[in-house]
Length: 299
Image 1 (tube, helix red, strand yellow):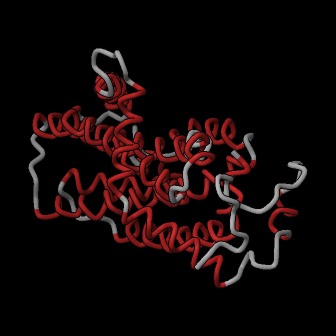
Image 2: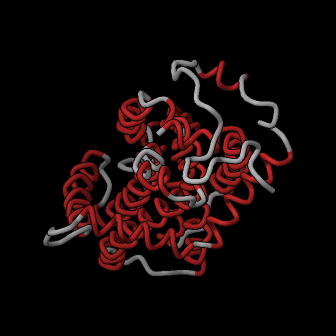
């Protein structure tokens, strides 16, 4: 089905842009009569479907962006891996002494938590810029907008894969062996990737319209890192540690960490993750239905 307002040939799609000074409540309440029509839902669904079907384009764009970032670099994305290894060895060693825990048991805990945190943080920070960085493509090509989100998720997963050897080496040195529970790492990565898609859609649209969101999110990420059990366990904080479970990142780190360590996953972690994916996916899709056509004019 066609868009509510078909774009002119050669022109970016979407409704006419206002003064550019509307507040969020005004934007939410305003819009043409077809903003919530069946056609708008079908167009948004078709966008996501086409983005998934043409996954090779997303993979190519993600890989090209990764090569562009590290062009003429000696180690490329492995600079991230090297810095992560140094961070884990130094900070993990210090915090194991502060927590009075053996390095052999604490280092795998920090390594698995930190590699997961890096993936989550990249989804958040890159998600804010996903449509802004694709401005040139959005204005010149009629690609599904979900393609850019999938390309971002693919790129961050590639960097995550680069970091895995460091974690696997630390697990092997510390005597952590795979178990049947290690297989739970597969759905854990898939659930985290799905969260990346939702974050890319939601943050990408909001940050395209309100650029102030980007520095706000950057500041909150630094604060959230210390409120996520990466360098310590919730038990180290006593009863105050229960408050950490209000942090969504805690549950994603929990399901990934249990998979890496070959331990039985926490039912609370999985229920929280699945609940957030369902609620976030529904909210993100409704936002995509409402604002998809405006993205081109916001970037």
